[in-house]
Amino acid sequence: MGSENLDSEHAVMGSISLTHTLSSPIPVILAVVAAARCEGNRFHIAGMARIVVIFDFDRTIIDGDSDNWVVTQMSLIQLFHQLLPTMSWNSLMNRMLEELHLQGKTTEDIAQCLKRTPLPPPIISAIKSAFSIGCDLRIVSDANQFFIETILKHHGLLSCFKEIITNPTFIDEEGRLRIIPYHDFRSSPHGCNLCPPNMCKGLIVEQIQASASTDGNKTLIYLGDGKGDYCPSLKLREVDHVMPREKFPLWERIHDNPMLVKAKVHGWSSGEELEMTLLRVISTILANDCNANCDYILTDSSDCKVRYMPPATLESSPQTPPTHH
Image (cartoon, rainbow, N blue to C red; front, side, top):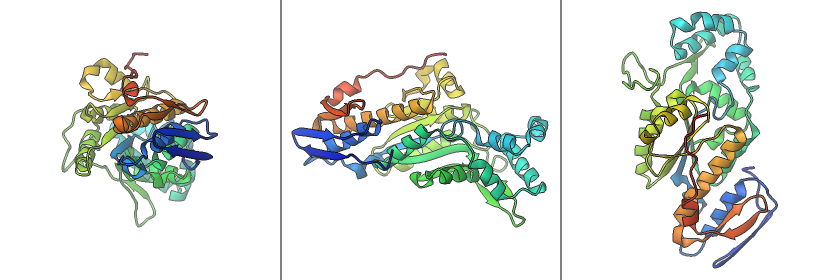
Protein backbone atom coordinates (compact mmCIF):
# COMPACT_ATOMS: atom_id res chain seq x y z
CA MET A 1 0.00 0.00 0.00
CA GLY A 2 2.83 2.44 0.79
CA SER A 3 3.94 2.39 -2.87
CA GLU A 4 0.48 2.91 -4.37
CA ASN A 5 -0.39 6.29 -5.82
CA LEU A 6 -3.61 8.15 -6.31
CA ASP A 7 -4.97 7.41 -9.78
CA SER A 8 -5.83 11.07 -10.20
CA GLU A 9 -5.35 13.98 -7.87
CA HIS A 10 -6.39 17.59 -8.23
CA ALA A 11 -6.28 20.15 -5.46
CA VAL A 12 -6.90 23.89 -5.63
CA MET A 13 -7.12 26.42 -2.82
CA GLY A 14 -10.62 27.01 -1.54
CA SER A 15 -12.12 24.17 -3.57
CA ILE A 16 -10.50 20.76 -3.21
CA SER A 17 -11.34 17.93 -5.53
CA LEU A 18 -9.72 14.56 -5.00
CA THR A 19 -10.55 11.35 -6.84
CA HIS A 20 -8.95 7.90 -6.66
CA THR A 21 -9.78 4.23 -6.69
CA LEU A 22 -8.13 3.11 -3.49
CA SER A 23 -10.30 1.70 -0.70
CA SER A 24 -7.56 1.38 1.95
CA PRO A 25 -6.81 3.68 4.92
CA ILE A 26 -3.88 5.41 3.20
CA PRO A 27 -6.13 7.83 1.21
CA VAL A 28 -7.07 9.35 4.57
CA ILE A 29 -3.49 10.45 5.01
CA LEU A 30 -2.87 11.41 1.40
CA ALA A 31 -5.96 13.58 1.35
CA VAL A 32 -4.81 15.43 4.45
CA VAL A 33 -1.46 16.02 2.76
CA ALA A 34 -3.11 17.21 -0.45
CA ALA A 35 -5.44 19.53 1.46
CA ALA A 36 -2.62 20.98 3.49
CA ARG A 37 -0.41 21.83 0.53
CA CYS A 38 -1.83 25.29 -0.03
CA GLU A 39 -0.09 28.61 -0.53
CA GLY A 40 1.29 30.07 2.65
CA ASN A 41 0.93 26.78 4.54
CA ARG A 42 4.27 25.38 5.69
CA PHE A 43 2.79 21.89 6.03
CA HIS A 44 4.18 19.45 3.46
CA ILE A 45 5.24 15.80 3.19
CA ALA A 46 8.82 16.45 4.32
CA GLY A 47 7.50 18.02 7.50
CA MET A 48 5.71 14.85 8.48
CA ALA A 49 8.87 13.67 10.25
CA ARG A 50 7.60 15.61 13.25
CA ILE A 51 5.52 12.48 13.93
CA VAL A 52 7.73 9.81 15.54
CA VAL A 53 6.20 6.33 15.53
CA ILE A 54 7.88 3.88 17.92
CA PHE A 55 7.11 0.18 17.48
CA ASP A 56 7.77 -2.72 19.78
CA PHE A 57 8.61 -5.78 17.68
CA ASP A 58 7.45 -9.08 19.18
CA ARG A 59 3.64 -9.41 19.31
CA THR A 60 3.36 -5.95 17.76
CA ILE A 61 5.01 -5.94 14.34
CA ILE A 62 5.09 -9.72 14.20
CA ASP A 63 2.13 -11.53 15.68
CA GLY A 64 4.19 -13.86 17.86
CA ASP A 65 7.57 -13.84 19.59
CA SER A 66 10.75 -14.16 17.51
CA ASP A 67 12.67 -15.88 20.32
CA ASN A 68 9.92 -18.44 20.85
CA TRP A 69 9.71 -18.97 17.10
CA VAL A 70 13.40 -19.92 16.83
CA VAL A 71 13.29 -22.07 19.97
CA THR A 72 10.24 -23.95 18.70
CA GLN A 73 11.15 -24.25 15.03
CA MET A 74 14.73 -25.32 15.73
CA SER A 75 13.82 -27.96 18.35
CA LEU A 76 15.23 -26.29 21.45
CA ILE A 77 12.09 -26.38 23.60
CA GLN A 78 13.25 -29.01 26.08
CA LEU A 79 16.61 -27.37 26.82
CA PHE A 80 15.01 -23.93 26.89
CA HIS A 81 12.50 -24.87 29.60
CA GLN A 82 15.18 -26.76 31.52
CA LEU A 83 17.38 -23.64 31.77
CA LEU A 84 14.63 -21.01 32.03
CA PRO A 85 14.43 -21.04 35.86
CA THR A 86 18.18 -20.45 36.13
CA MET A 87 18.86 -17.67 33.64
CA SER A 88 17.54 -14.28 32.54
CA TRP A 89 15.71 -14.33 29.22
CA ASN A 90 18.39 -12.41 27.35
CA SER A 91 21.16 -14.68 28.63
CA LEU A 92 19.04 -17.74 27.94
CA MET A 93 18.57 -16.80 24.29
CA ASN A 94 22.32 -16.32 23.95
CA ARG A 95 22.72 -19.82 25.37
CA MET A 96 20.22 -21.16 22.81
CA LEU A 97 22.28 -19.68 20.00
CA GLU A 98 25.34 -21.37 21.47
CA GLU A 99 23.47 -24.68 21.44
CA LEU A 100 22.55 -24.23 17.78
CA HIS A 101 26.22 -23.58 16.99
CA LEU A 102 27.23 -26.76 18.84
CA GLN A 103 24.67 -28.67 16.77
CA GLY A 104 26.32 -27.42 13.58
CA LYS A 105 23.60 -24.88 12.73
CA THR A 106 24.81 -21.76 10.94
CA THR A 107 23.59 -18.18 11.04
CA GLU A 108 22.09 -18.80 7.61
CA ASP A 109 20.07 -21.68 9.07
CA ILE A 110 18.78 -19.31 11.75
CA ALA A 111 18.03 -16.66 9.12
CA GLN A 112 16.02 -19.11 7.03
CA CYS A 113 14.01 -20.01 10.12
CA LEU A 114 13.34 -16.33 10.87
CA LYS A 115 12.17 -15.66 7.32
CA ARG A 116 9.28 -18.04 7.93
CA THR A 117 8.05 -15.93 10.86
CA PRO A 118 4.46 -14.82 10.15
CA LEU A 119 4.06 -11.09 9.63
CA PRO A 120 0.46 -9.96 9.02
CA PRO A 121 -0.01 -8.11 5.70
CA PRO A 122 -1.90 -5.21 7.36
CA ILE A 123 1.15 -4.55 9.55
CA ILE A 124 3.36 -4.42 6.47
CA SER A 125 0.86 -2.06 4.87
CA ALA A 126 0.70 0.19 7.95
CA ILE A 127 4.49 0.51 8.15
CA LYS A 128 4.87 1.28 4.45
CA SER A 129 2.02 3.78 4.57
CA ALA A 130 3.42 5.67 7.56
CA PHE A 131 6.89 5.67 6.02
CA SER A 132 5.68 6.78 2.59
CA ILE A 133 4.18 9.97 4.00
CA GLY A 134 7.32 10.86 5.93
CA CYS A 135 6.76 9.70 9.51
CA ASP A 136 9.92 8.99 11.51
CA LEU A 137 9.71 5.26 12.30
CA ARG A 138 11.73 3.60 15.06
CA ILE A 139 11.79 0.20 16.76
CA VAL A 140 12.48 -0.22 20.48
CA SER A 141 12.53 -3.92 21.27
CA ASP A 142 13.90 -6.42 23.77
CA ALA A 143 14.41 -8.94 20.96
CA ASN A 144 17.77 -8.69 19.17
CA GLN A 145 19.35 -7.04 16.17
CA PHE A 146 19.85 -10.14 14.01
CA PHE A 147 16.31 -11.45 14.44
CA ILE A 148 14.64 -8.10 13.81
CA GLU A 149 16.76 -7.06 10.84
CA THR A 150 16.49 -10.47 9.18
CA ILE A 151 12.69 -10.48 9.37
CA LEU A 152 12.30 -6.85 8.29
CA LYS A 153 14.70 -7.23 5.37
CA HIS A 154 12.88 -10.35 4.18
CA HIS A 155 9.61 -8.40 4.04
CA GLY A 156 11.15 -5.29 2.47
CA LEU A 157 10.67 -3.15 5.57
CA LEU A 158 14.18 -2.59 6.93
CA SER A 159 14.75 0.68 5.08
CA CYS A 160 11.50 2.11 6.50
CA PHE A 161 13.03 2.50 9.96
CA LYS A 162 15.32 5.34 10.93
CA GLU A 163 16.57 3.50 14.01
CA ILE A 164 16.32 0.05 15.59
CA ILE A 165 17.15 0.04 19.30
CA THR A 166 17.49 -3.48 20.63
CA ASN A 167 19.98 -5.96 22.08
CA PRO A 168 23.03 -5.94 19.76
CA THR A 169 24.30 -9.09 18.06
CA PHE A 170 27.53 -10.10 16.39
CA ILE A 171 29.06 -13.18 14.78
CA ASP A 172 32.29 -14.26 16.50
CA GLU A 173 35.42 -15.72 14.92
CA GLU A 174 33.94 -19.22 15.14
CA GLY A 175 30.84 -18.20 13.22
CA ARG A 176 28.56 -18.26 16.25
CA LEU A 177 25.81 -15.66 16.62
CA ARG A 178 25.98 -13.88 19.97
CA ILE A 179 23.61 -11.50 21.78
CA ILE A 180 24.79 -8.63 23.99
CA PRO A 181 22.47 -6.92 26.50
CA TYR A 182 21.49 -3.39 25.47
CA HIS A 183 22.15 -2.20 29.03
CA ASP A 184 25.13 -3.77 30.74
CA PHE A 185 23.31 -4.68 33.92
CA ARG A 186 26.49 -5.85 35.65
CA SER A 187 28.68 -2.77 35.27
CA SER A 188 26.02 -0.05 34.86
CA PRO A 189 22.49 -1.16 35.82
CA HIS A 190 19.70 1.16 34.66
CA GLY A 191 17.95 1.05 38.06
CA CYS A 192 14.38 0.80 36.78
CA ASN A 193 12.22 -1.72 38.64
CA LEU A 194 9.57 -1.75 35.89
CA CYS A 195 11.90 -3.13 33.21
CA PRO A 196 14.09 -6.21 32.73
CA PRO A 197 17.76 -5.72 33.69
CA ASN A 198 19.05 -5.69 30.10
CA MET A 199 16.76 -2.93 28.77
CA CYS A 200 14.77 0.01 30.11
CA LYS A 201 12.58 1.25 27.29
CA GLY A 202 11.58 4.26 29.38
CA LEU A 203 15.15 5.57 29.33
CA ILE A 204 15.29 4.99 25.58
CA VAL A 205 12.08 6.94 24.99
CA GLU A 206 13.41 9.79 27.12
CA GLN A 207 16.51 9.87 24.91
CA ILE A 208 14.33 9.95 21.79
CA GLN A 209 12.28 12.77 23.30
CA ALA A 210 15.41 14.76 24.14
CA SER A 211 16.76 14.29 20.63
CA ALA A 212 13.42 15.12 19.03
CA SER A 213 13.05 18.32 21.04
CA THR A 214 16.19 19.73 19.42
CA ASP A 215 14.57 19.30 15.99
CA GLY A 216 11.36 21.12 16.92
CA ASN A 217 8.03 20.09 18.35
CA LYS A 218 7.32 16.40 17.68
CA THR A 219 4.50 14.05 18.57
CA LEU A 220 5.21 10.45 19.58
CA ILE A 221 3.05 7.41 18.87
CA TYR A 222 4.10 4.32 20.84
CA LEU A 223 2.87 0.81 19.93
CA GLY A 224 3.48 -2.17 22.20
CA ASP A 225 2.04 -5.09 24.10
CA GLY A 226 4.20 -6.23 26.99
CA LYS A 227 5.16 -5.32 30.54
CA GLY A 228 8.35 -3.74 29.24
CA ASP A 229 6.26 -1.28 27.22
CA TYR A 230 4.60 0.17 30.32
CA CYS A 231 7.59 2.21 31.50
CA PRO A 232 7.95 4.08 28.16
CA SER A 233 4.19 4.67 28.11
CA LEU A 234 4.54 6.56 31.39
CA LYS A 235 7.10 8.87 29.76
CA LEU A 236 4.71 10.07 27.06
CA ARG A 237 3.12 13.53 27.22
CA GLU A 238 -0.49 14.66 26.78
CA VAL A 239 0.12 15.40 23.10
CA ASP A 240 1.46 11.89 22.50
CA HIS A 241 -0.38 8.65 21.80
CA VAL A 242 0.02 5.08 23.04
CA MET A 243 -1.41 2.05 21.23
CA PRO A 244 -1.50 -0.99 23.53
CA ARG A 245 -2.53 -4.38 22.17
CA GLU A 246 -5.78 -5.35 23.88
CA LYS A 247 -5.79 -8.24 26.37
CA PHE A 248 -1.99 -8.08 26.62
CA PRO A 249 0.05 -6.93 29.66
CA LEU A 250 0.52 -3.30 28.59
CA TRP A 251 -3.23 -2.89 28.07
CA GLU A 252 -3.93 -4.42 31.48
CA ARG A 253 -1.36 -2.23 33.24
CA ILE A 254 -2.87 0.91 31.71
CA HIS A 255 -6.37 -0.30 32.65
CA ASP A 256 -5.32 -0.88 36.26
CA ASN A 257 -4.49 2.80 36.74
CA PRO A 258 -5.32 4.84 33.61
CA MET A 259 -4.63 8.17 35.33
CA LEU A 260 -0.89 7.43 35.35
CA VAL A 261 -0.69 7.54 31.55
CA LYS A 262 -0.86 11.08 30.16
CA ALA A 263 -0.93 10.12 26.49
CA LYS A 264 -4.11 9.38 24.55
CA VAL A 265 -4.83 5.63 24.54
CA HIS A 266 -5.92 3.72 21.43
CA GLY A 267 -6.36 -0.05 21.73
CA TRP A 268 -6.00 -2.58 18.95
CA SER A 269 -6.21 -6.36 18.77
CA SER A 270 -5.34 -7.41 15.19
CA GLY A 271 -3.19 -6.35 12.30
CA GLU A 272 -6.19 -4.79 10.60
CA GLU A 273 -7.05 -2.78 13.70
CA LEU A 274 -3.45 -1.66 14.15
CA GLU A 275 -3.35 -0.37 10.58
CA MET A 276 -6.66 1.48 10.79
CA THR A 277 -5.94 2.90 14.24
CA LEU A 278 -2.40 4.05 13.46
CA LEU A 279 -3.40 5.80 10.25
CA ARG A 280 -6.39 7.39 11.97
CA VAL A 281 -4.14 8.74 14.76
CA ILE A 282 -1.66 10.09 12.22
CA SER A 283 -4.43 11.78 10.24
CA THR A 284 -5.78 13.34 13.45
CA ILE A 285 -2.35 14.77 14.28
CA LEU A 286 -1.98 16.16 10.77
CA ALA A 287 -5.47 17.66 10.82
CA ASN A 288 -4.69 19.38 14.11
CA ASP A 289 -1.50 20.74 12.55
CA CYS A 290 -3.47 22.13 9.64
CA ASN A 291 -6.00 23.71 12.02
CA ALA A 292 -7.19 26.97 10.47
CA ASN A 293 -5.00 26.53 7.40
CA CYS A 294 -6.94 23.66 5.84
CA ASP A 295 -10.55 22.67 6.34
CA TYR A 296 -10.81 19.67 4.04
CA ILE A 297 -9.97 16.09 4.91
CA LEU A 298 -10.92 12.72 3.52
CA THR A 299 -13.02 11.16 6.25
CA ASP A 300 -14.54 8.14 4.52
CA SER A 301 -12.16 5.77 2.78
CA SER A 302 -15.01 3.45 1.78
CA ASP A 303 -16.43 5.81 -0.85
CA CYS A 304 -13.18 7.74 -1.31
CA LYS A 305 -14.74 11.20 -1.29
CA VAL A 306 -13.39 14.34 0.24
CA ARG A 307 -15.74 15.85 2.77
CA TYR A 308 -15.64 19.19 4.57
CA MET A 309 -14.57 18.56 8.14
CA PRO A 310 -13.06 21.26 10.39
CA PRO A 311 -10.10 19.95 12.42
CA ALA A 312 -11.98 20.75 15.62
CA THR A 313 -14.44 17.99 14.71
CA LEU A 314 -11.63 15.50 14.55
CA GLU A 315 -10.18 16.71 17.83
CA SER A 316 -13.44 15.95 19.60
CA SER A 317 -13.73 12.40 18.27
CA PRO A 318 -13.80 9.91 21.17
CA GLN A 319 -10.66 8.10 22.17
CA THR A 320 -10.61 4.39 22.84
CA PRO A 321 -10.71 4.05 26.64
CA PRO A 322 -8.78 1.32 28.38
CA THR A 323 -11.47 -1.27 29.10
CA HIS A 324 -10.98 -4.56 30.82
CA HIS A 325 -11.65 -7.61 28.66
